[in-house]
Image 1 (tube, rainbow, N blue to C red):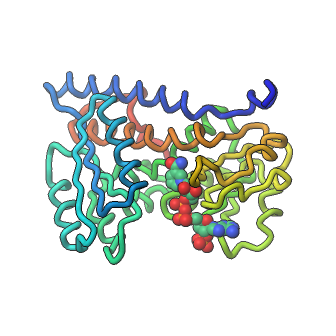
Image 2 (tube, rainbow, N blue to C red):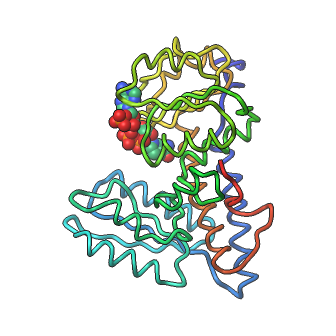
Length: 300
Ligand code: NAP
């Protein structure tokens, strides 16, 4: 990669590091102002999927590095929906737990939606409840799904002008594509939301000023689909650290692009930590002001 290409890279790691440093400072502030109370994130994991356990370990590690408490709830494969709901209800009722993260995918036949809905909105630091998603859709301040909020922060950090821009989002999952589309609409982009039934995907990508790939297929989005000068955000994370965008061909046409790894990935955990600190501050009655944790006035 030459120096011109390097200038196009969006460095998610350094932006995430700054968010985590701010979160750590706010943890101290909360502790000082409340006589020693510490923000606490409960992670709930069901079953033994190795990738899910790795993700939860990373989240717990970041939590502890920020000076927060990390509470681990591990339930065995075969846990029933009522058993999972019981565990979440206990965390919901605990005054010393400020955020609850239910790691997904949750193994079948558990009713995943019922489990998410058991999380009270003020502790929904992963933005998975219908209440949080509804607020987001309506452009109301809310905790939000971490990956799309992290992507919005990357765009903001790089002064990407979304007002009137054409944005194409590939993927419509409830944790990524759908909330992403809502956040972009809230910032006045004109959004095309694509999925597996979309016809002529390459043409819809070609007209976009901003492309968000959240499709879950390695190197699926080709460089020839990218409009020269477009901003390309690759949320994909496929085995072998491979994104959903064919990076080598896309960087030739993009004005800005996220690498994989080191682009969107680090932002997801940083936003989770930031939102947990904000949730704790709200529950403990501490104002973090404009240097706050997750800025809950954010509608994008
Ligand atoms: P998902 O739930 O599997 O959703 C994938 C979406 O892509 C679906 O909406 C699907 O359409 C659509 N799709 C599949 N094949 C397509 C095709 N050929 N053309 C157009 N659209 C197609 O995945 P997800 O959870 O949203 O994750 C998406 C990607 O982001 C994955 O690579 C995942 O690993 C990554 N991810 C990264 C982070 C992070 O922190 N970096 C966090 C979460 C996810 P249908 O709805 O029609 O099936």
